[in-house]
Length: 403
Image (cartoon, rainbow, N blue to C red; front, side):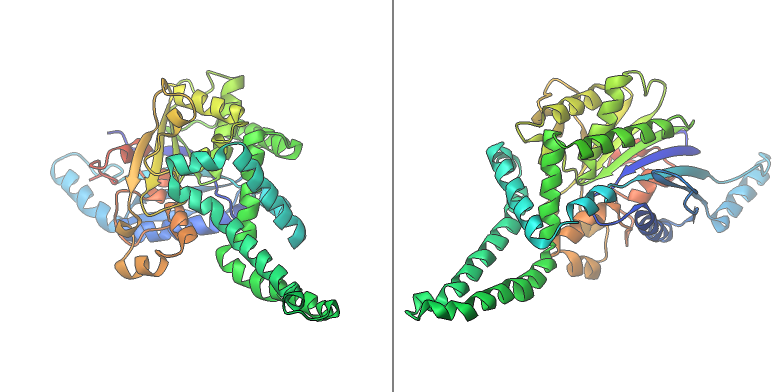
């Protein structure tokens, strides 16, 4: 198998309040963990000045201590020392959507709550919730949780406000019960709800509706801008092109790559392309009845002969569509399916580390793009910067490193 010497990576980040600089810093930390676990050398370059999306170069290679015996063996066999070992250079473009996250979180608390419940109603009316429970009931519960939690808090707030009336007191007593109710909601519930990132999840569902309906000019213009930036990045020559995406970023990636394929059906001709969706939330948007454009773009990607689609899923991650064939459910049963890669987070972490995070579903969901404690069947850094072609992750028995 020919090792990768040069790679271009376009990584579409998940729905997090992090810009490209923050995502790069996390990538560097995770990459150092991976290098320590697998025993290779790694250098993460600084962000390239003026790059948009933010880009940087990662160079991985065989450690000197491991290279020396190889060189000695070659010399003994009369092969000459040459340039032993391997080295891979990957240019990584962080296609974050922090601009959209900031915009959705920019309003006051009341406006964010109202926008969240409006998106909840829209998803229900468009059959999204029905689809979630039909295909992945745990994802359905993930959808309902922040809205049920907030609805309960609103009901309790109302109960406190009208408590004097229920006790038969004069309505004048609501002059104290009303402010008390407001204090409960602002100073008790809202801080408590931040443990579960409730308002952030509200914004996530607003974005899901926007990417499904494609009815917001600001979102559509942003996608067009990202498509132009990605098109420019694809002009660089490389042995392999990896388009990776995490969570909500998979819907963004499907739109952007779909836009490019609509305009240039031969754009990937002659290229080795791997589309890796990690904990994908494409169906979070695609199951809305109005998401016809997104579903069509999923079909374009699936039918593109140059693209190998790897759909990385995890049993213990409730925020993904485990064992659900995304291409077929998007209405393309006749198209080549995405290759499902089933991973286990507990196999990537030490028992102590796994016990610490396993009850935090958002943290488990982030593990796809974080560093490992142990050698496992999946490693995000090796997928995007390792020496082996990214397609090796499609086979659980394939080596992750040359040897």
